[in-house]
Length: 573
Image (cartoon, rainbow, N blue to C red; front, side, top):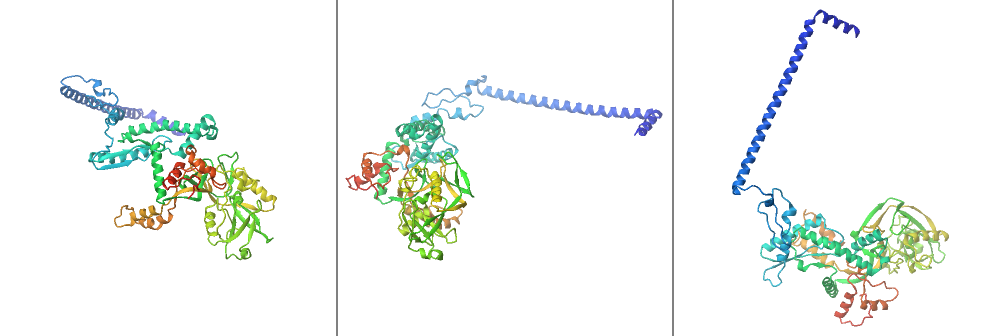
C-alpha cells in the first residue's frame, strides 16, 4: 500500500499539469449541475405563481358573479345559518345554502313539526285502503344499535311509499319489556351499585327499579326513533306491560285456549337456577368439554368439575348381586326411578322384570328393556333413568309408565324428594356429597374423563338444568303445515333461494317443529290475583306453584267464559 502512494506522489511531481486539468473539469461539472438545479427551481416558482394568479382570478370572477346575483352585496355569514325555530313549528330555513353539509343542522326542527302536525297519525274513519305494520318492539334493556336503524329505515321507506300512494297508513311504535333480559340487567346494576340482590330488595322495590330502568332507557329509545325520522304514529305508542297490551294478551290467550291451540302439559325445560325460570333453546350456549374441566358457576365459591363419568352400583333385590351404571351428573341419581338394559344383552337376561334398590331411600327401581335408549357396547350396558332431569329419560318414562321425581328446587338445591341427608344442598355440592355417601356404602366404582357438551345460559352463565315443569304450550302442528304449504304449493307464497333448499324444508321442517312453551317465570311478573291465590291454597302438595307468564287472570277468564264459576277446580287441563 505504501509503495502505491509513493508511486502516485512521484507521478504528480513529474506531471502537475495532469492534476490541474482534472480539478478544472470536476469544478465545471459541479457548476453545471448547480445551474440546472437553479433553472428548475425558477421554473417551479413561475408555475406556482401563474397557478396562484389564475386561482385568484377565478375566485374574483366567482365573487363578482355572486355579488351580481345578490345585487352587489357582500357575503354575510349569518345568511348561511338557519334561524331559530320555535318547537313544533315548521323549520325556518336560511336564505343561503350552507357551504358544508351538516346533518344536525339540516334535520333539526323538522320532526317536531311533523309530529305536531299529525302527519303520521292514521285516521280510523278514513275510507282509504288501510296499510298497517308494527315496529318490532326493541327491548328496553338499552339503546338502539345499527340493526335497529336498518329495520327502521326499511319499514319507514315502505310506510312512506304507501302513504304517498293513497293508503291510510298506520305504523305502530312500542317497546318490549324484555322481562328476563331486563331482570338480569337491573340485577347486575343494583349488585354493582349497592351490593344487593333482588331478594334483598324484595319484590315491590325491585319492580320499582325495573320501572325506573324502563323510564330511563325507554325514553332514550323513543328519542332515537324520532332522531331516525321514523314516521310512526305516536298516538298509538305501546309498551308490552301496559294495561291495554295485557288485555290483548288475555284475549289472545283465551281464544287460543278455546280453539285448543294451547294446553297445559308437563315437559322438560331448560331451567336457569339463577333466574329461576325456563329459557328457550336459543338462549342456551353449548360448550365442548374434552375431559376433566373446572368451570366457575354462579353462586359457588369454588370452580365446579365437569367432564367426569362417575360409575356406581345399585344393589339388586333378592340378593342377585349388583348392576353398575355411569353418569356425568351423579347427583341426579337421587331422582332415579328405573334402570334400562338392552333386551338382547345376554349379561342381563336373568334381570328381566327384576328390581334394583335405591341405596339412600329404599325405592324399588324396575329394570326395563329398551333397545332405543341403551347401547350394550357402551360402558356397563346399563343406563340409570331419571325422567325429571334428562330428555331421553323423560321420553322413556312414557313408554314404560315410570314415575318422574323432581329433586331440585327452583334455585338449584336438593328438595325433600332427594332425601333428608341431602336436602338443602346446592346441586353441585350435593354431587360431592353423593359420591362420598356412595363410597361409605361401598357402591362407588370409580370415575374417568368423559367428553361432553354442557349447556350454559347465555344471560347468566349458569349451567342449565333439565327440569320437569308444568308449562303452557302452543300447538304448532297446524302452523308448521301452513309454513310447509306456503313453500311447496303451486302458488309459492314463499320462495326459497337457492331452490335446492326447498327439499330440506319439506323433509325437515314439519318433523322438527315442537310445541312452543309460552310461559316465563319472571320476578317482576310473578304477581297473582285473588283468584289464583284461592286456587293455590287448594292445590295438593305435589303441585308446583302456579305462576304463568300470561298471569293468573287468564285462567280466571277462561273459566268464566266456559261457565265454570267455582274457583276450587284443578287449574291444569
